[in-house]
Length: 314
Image 1 (cartoon, rainbow, N blue to C red):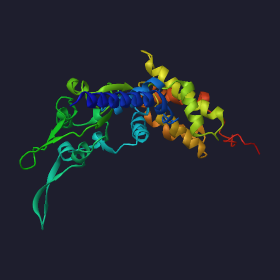
Image 2: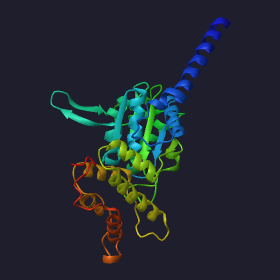
Image 3: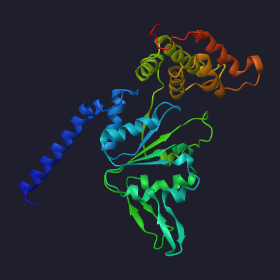
Image 4: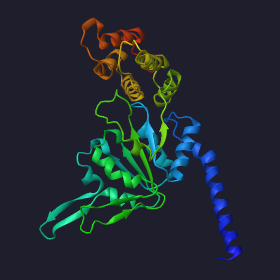
């Protein structure tokens, strides 16, 4: 290659890098939905990681917005996307590789999975939801796919066992609940975790959660939304206490559900009956977790005969 061509290629690389940096630190933040409560730095890091084709693992408490953030990333970048709920997968090999099928007119043949198509789609964003609930066999299959020095999938059940290379620019975004408080989750293999860039979703403060609820349900009286945010915040505070009276906190997802029930005409007391209490054990009677939470709800509950739910007056 001539010196002039070398200089042209270099100029293109510099220009491309400059445009990427400008997008990450400028335009990208405008594309973050207001419903995603995430620091500006973490959102930029998420966008940058996706644009650089990194493997991303979104961690944080259940209901903290991991999946929503991942889907918002897809919308912001306007790239082809594929979704796989690994926590609901009973047969990892069928989901990630494919299986043998039979048709009368074709006989026995091997059918490749959608995942095989996904990894061959240049620039695709592939969401691996609930990775921490996946079967270990799924982790084994993903090891070579996620390794930056390998990036291939061996379709060993197909005749000839072809090796499928991951296309250029493919980005994997996984979500995981990490911690002993999450039932049905498994301790993730360290080698698998090392293949990801970790982005942790924050637990919302009371003010952040109230801001979110007000944005989603602007017609509901603020005092009712403040009660919801106060209850969820108190459950998190109590859970964080070594001598706390409850063992699990209410999630932002639950707070949003309660606010939606109030929007649909339920009182806070009624909403708690169906959306809060089922999360807590009633073993122990007066000393049970459910009794404590009921007392907490009663502390913040607005009188049930208050029918002016939207603060509009007569």
